[in-house]
Amino acid sequence: MIPPSGLPPELREFLALPGPQTLVLRGPPGTGKTTLGVALLEEFNGERMLITGRVPRERLLRDAPHLARTNGPSFELVDTTDAAGPEETARVVARVSDLLHPDEGEARGLTGFLWLPEPMQQAWARLRSGTRAVVVVDSWTALIEPYLRSVPANRPGAPSPMEVQRELLHRMRSVEAHLVLVLEDTEPSDVEYLVDGVVTTSRQLFDNRLERWLAIPKLRGIRVANATYPFTLDGGRFHCLPQLPSELPASEIFSDPDPSPSPLLLWPGSIEFEAAFGRLKAGEVTLVEYDSEVPLYIPRVLSIPIAADLLRRGGRLLVAPPPLLPPEEVWELLHPFLPASEFEERVRILSAHVDESTEEKAESGEEYALYTTLLPIPRITDPGRPASGRSPEAIRFLRTPTAEGTPNLALMYIEGMRTIARLQGMPFTPDTFPAVTTQYIYHAPAHLFYFARIGDPLAEAIHGYVSLHLRIRDREGRALLYGVRPRTGTYACEPRPTPIPGTAPYTLRPVV
Image (cartoon, rainbow, N blue to C red):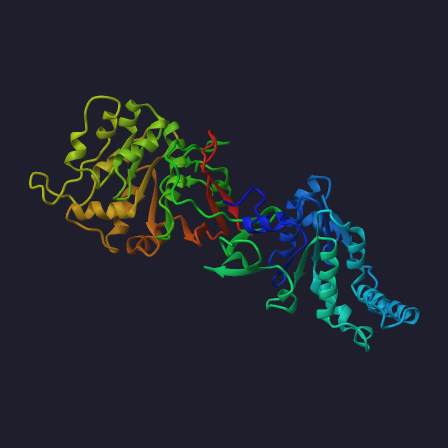
């Protein structure tokens, strides 16, 4: 799991190694390298220094508000804007050559040091050997390239870029410091052969929406469990998106309290969901499509908070679960929100999973309420109950008003509805399914909430009928959620592994 700091565990392990260690952060401009460098500084336990000629203090505090809230950075910020240029360095080196014999080792060492950019000289002079320290140079490209391309730097005897970089690494290793060099390059550079680790950042478009990715092509001495991580810069902080667990433990699901209940509007159970996508209106349709790789608990944690608030407000709920979900599990999810007697009155389950063995379980006791909520599914093989091809009981149930100002809700998995229709002998088609949808929304004061796999022909047939159209994509084990209608940015849906009473069971983290 990603720790609270948001750094990948491999980089946390790198920072914990004894010095000296060297790391290159490489990527094109605007891909989050500065924010990642600040995150490394904040995570490090020891002396910390940021050498920058691109991000003065005021800009850093503006882009990272959390630093301003804590009375400024907890690390030393060295502004290189007024650093001495190569002309001054060349004059100093010439004077040293006049004072010391050019063949002496002392002269070679001193001139090599003097050819380092002045901020690096200052950083080395401030560090003490044996003290844990990290220096982030943002960016090394901006600092060294103009320096070495100038006329004085090209004079006879001036070092090559590789020689300057070797000198820098030698000096930092002598004080056993961690050194992080930020490079504004898209391709590997020579310095990457000299350092202990390389991290790259990039931006991509997926479904025409921004994604940010971190890759770890090299990290000596550390086992790289994951070579790539999607991340976000939400709130000016670097945060890698954690991989989803294979399953969530069965437990009660809670919801955020509704700050302002509204008539004929359903509260989605999450403040973050409302901020991203709004509330749900009676007489409208929501469609959530998801990748086959997305765990089925993701639709569950999105929908159960909506149902929980509806039931608390006195509304009616119709559920058509996926075919492999037994009605007993639906009961387990819903029964904490209302007494068994009200469960019988205000919940109906339209399940293809019901069979004779299920009906035989309807015995006396508290769970009897479950079996009285199951709507009958006439099979074509049952001659005594001719198939109707539809479920008028479901529509009649939703049509019945309950609490004043509270719309009813239908949570419908299209795969479950398809299975039921096939059992009834009148399977749905893309031509007939829109008519089924209109029956529900025109004949009942309810909101219809569909779930379907991306690419399902029945779901595609109703794209023009939905008011809220969301998609959930699996991106290397992460669930990224975004609005197709209305169009929104991307959010990382992160389920809470441990439920918090009075809180939605997930967070939506903007991917920016």
